[in-house]
Structure formats: structure tokens, C-alpha cells
Image (cartoon, rainbow, N blue to C red; front, top):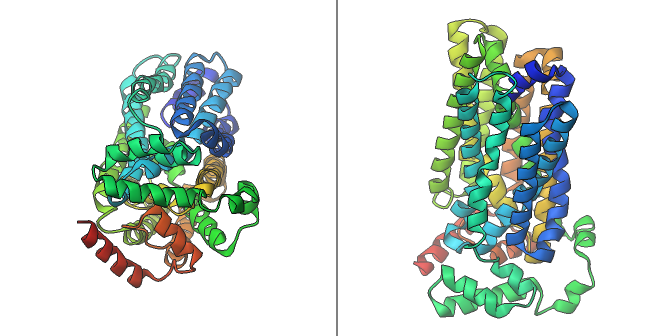
Length: 450
């Protein structure tokens, strides 16, 4: 959308307010999908919820590419947003539930990795198709998003259902078969299956049947409250630090720095996409080795520095070659630090920390916080930039990013090397802050596993 919006303005003659609404509405609408995603995935399964998300999203992409006017374009954007809401909620949950414990962090980073790959391909396609006529190029830019549905269709014939969902539906034998696909040791599979059954409430079924999931989330125990603060808080900080403003409005940022011409602007955005993709690949190798919390510290501190530097550059050095180079450096630095830490780890944490009976709905709540924050940023960036300048807006983002450092220190535990059931007990026992002891236990656990 960042490149397409330039030509949509020319073709459909939309206003700046319509531009903000078109860009930001996707995130706001996606909260509907995220809220519905929890119940849907509990009803029809994680696998088929992903299929439904893909169908809705691809329908929206097709409508947008054929839209004759702004109203129809908004209908397509609306459908795409609902599909994204389902997708961002269910993908991390499914991966966390299907993954072996020692590789769960890396595997749960996959959604963020492929989001970044999609952003890169979007930037590249924007640049590649920018030479077409303004009536055609933006339609092609949005329409190529339909192609991944082919791969999703093939994958649905291969991937299994979540073993934890199967246990929730009392389909124990099927769950055992799925676990055997990721662990060849039958004894370990039986141990994992027993843990999942206990977590699913089969041992204390009467206790959990009395308390509806949403009632428990709205009136949480102390342990669940700590989980909600950590999960929803990290989701919101991921977005309010301004990453979507950087992604959606990078042409606007670079134009303010002094770059002229649409082709040059779109070429500069490709550098942003490459940086995001490269550093998210680095994150996947580090997340289960270094741990979640150290990477979060590096990420949030680095983002704060780059956002502050970008504010200074745009305020003091704009419209010169030095200012352009520094602006590109700061934007690429910001997305690099985001992608190596809070970007992927946000989804890892929210899929890890909640108990099985609450996981789908609680993850949906976290995704709602993320999508609302994203929408507010995207729908207000241009207006706020007009009031306090683009540089001033990034000073605000830098201040929020500094707060995220304190949040990570206070509220985020280390979950590396722990089973989902062990993480649940850690929160219930009021021990999420005891980092040193937990890391020692992690080392012992990994040594025993190996």
C-alpha cells in the first residue's frame, strides 16, 4: 500500500484524509477478525481457521485490484483487514502448539519473518510496476497479493491439526499421531500428551466448565492478570513505537528528507524492506539461543536511538545529501532493531504465556491491541506530522520506545527453553521476574534434553 497509495491519489483523486483512512482502516477492521478468531479456532480448529483467513483476505485483494472508485476500494480493504485479523491471531497459536519445545521460539517467529518477506516483495513490486500507467500500476501492486493463496491451498493438504486442539476435542489418538511426527521418542510423546491433557482441563474438567473463558479473561486471577499485562502490553508497544508509520509512509518520510521523484522514493523503500527481511532472519537464529528478553532489550534501546536520530535528522538536516543519507540510515536502523527483537518476539510471547484453555481468546485480545494501536498510528500519522512536523512525530515515537524499555524490564519474563505448561506455572506462582533462577533452570533443562 505504501507505493500504491501514491498512484491511487493520482487515479482516484482521493484526499489526504481518505488516504489516512484507506491505509489505517485495515488495522482497525482486523480487530474484528482477531476477536472472532479465538472462538472460530476453538470451534473448527486452528488449521481451517487459517484457511478461512486466507479466503477472506484474497477476496479483499481481488476486490481492491478491480475497484472503480474509493468506496469499492474500501470494501476490499475491509475484507482484507478481517482476513489479516484472523491470520495474525491464529498463525502464532498454531505454530506454538505444533512446535517442539526447544525450537518453539524460532518457529513462532515464522509469521513475522514472512510478514517481512511480504513487505519486501511489496516494496519490490511497487518499484517494478511503477512504470505502468497510474490507472493500472496500483491495481497490479495490490492484485499480486492473491498469488500466495496457491501455496496456502497446497499447504492445507499437508499440515496437521494442532495436537492441543485435538486434545481439547478429546481426539487423543489423533493428537498422539501428530506429536509422533515431531518427536520419534514414544515415551516422550506420552509424557507430552499427559501434560497437554492436564493443561486442557481433562483432569479438572468440572472446575473449568464452570467458568467461561471470556469471563475468566475479564475477571482474571492474579496469574492471568500478569499474563494479560505482559501479552497485551508487548503487542501494543510493538505498534505504538511507530513501525507501521515507517512501513506505510516511508515514501513520505524520505520525501521530507529531500528525495525527489516517485521512482527514487520507491527505490529507497526497497532498502527498508531488505533490511527488515535480513534482520528477521538473524532473529530466528538468536531467539532460542540468546533468549527473548536480551533481544528485547537490544531491540527497544536500538529503536529508541534510531527514532530519536531520525527526528533530529528531519528537523535539522532535511533537503540535503547528508540529511537524506542519515534519514535512510535511521529508518533502516529502526526496522532492523524492530525485526531482530520486538517484532517477532511479541508474537512468540503472546503464543507462549497463556494457558491452553485461554490461549486462543487471550491471543485474540493481544492481536486486537496490536491492530488498534497500528490503526491509530496509521490513521493519524499524516495529520500529526502536519501539526508538529514529521521530525517532531518521530520524537514522540522515540519517547514511547523509551517507555517500552522499562516495560520489558518490569513485565516480561524469560520463557526460553520452557514448555508451555511450565510457563503457565511460572506466572501462576508469581515468579515471572526471577530471571537469574529461571535461566539456570533453562540450562539444566536443555542439558537434560540433550
